[in-house]
Length: 452
Image (tube, helix red, strand yellow):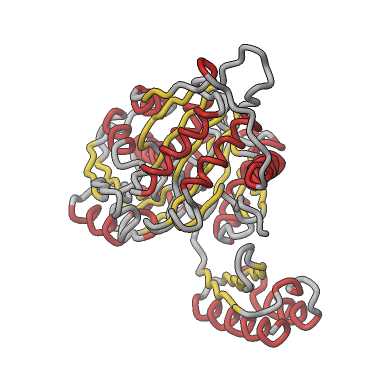
């Protein structure tokens, strides 16, 4: 039996892999572990519950709320808000836990449950394991300790959450956005109202696309996974920049005035230098992952900023930031964590910080993003191989060494096993795209030969 929790909560096809019964049971288990129901005499635990606009979120929210209230937890239902909003409100309201229903950038049929601990922090593996163990014990017949009468949880809508969160976002900006025209693609998701409102309150002229969620169209041909509509809209409206969110708005990508993509590494580079100038880049360092573009690494080295790299996944970036006291980290995909203002990746905050830098300097986004040259990167997935031997095969090690000699200091090779599929990912960066493709193709063949 596999582990329920993946790299970002529990996900599955709603009403198939992820059912109402599972949502209810996991919520009761989370109440026992995170809210410690029944542990303290007179303690009345509180949970913040939010969701993205997926149709399945309606019944899953009902199941989560029912589970929490049945365990004696009072529920503040904040409705459709981004994942980082739920994290922020969990912390600012002093709640015992937060629950977000979303499958992020996944297609509409999927959904997920993500829990936050006190303070709005993502769960450590140990806490996820305790929730899963508690859930499975009940599924096997162990009864819950159920309160009755006045002991059951009470449920109320917390509409103030929207304004509280937007005010927080605008309040942490170093400067206003007057004079900027910004196009925002909400991916028909959780940021469809929040992001345009925040940019407008900060002073920007806002054009909005992808902001008419109907429960079925989330991430459909829009948002950070489909940039073409945003690129066209930025050029059409002669905007200064565009911001694209994913379904739960914990990340963003950007588009400059010419319609060219600005990815997560470039966004990190711009914000890192702005924070260094402001004296808020603690340790003079930024945290990325092993997938960070080599151009980002070279740019940070040239600018005198240390780049600390972790395994792929924003949770590993966050762990490294916390353990070493750093203020900024993120991924190429647009997960950017500004730890002084958020406990998790926040796409709206990231977009606002990027726009604030454009407004403060009077420079174009293209000019600012030009601090780093994004080197061509080729990724090939090699399926049906023994991924467990990727680090032990002598033949594969020899092929990698030969590729690294060919690329020299202007290129990079990365082979890593997929965490969820029986395949090996081959990534090659080089100054020339044709060279990157050639080397990646040869390495993919070597993986098939050595591990097939």
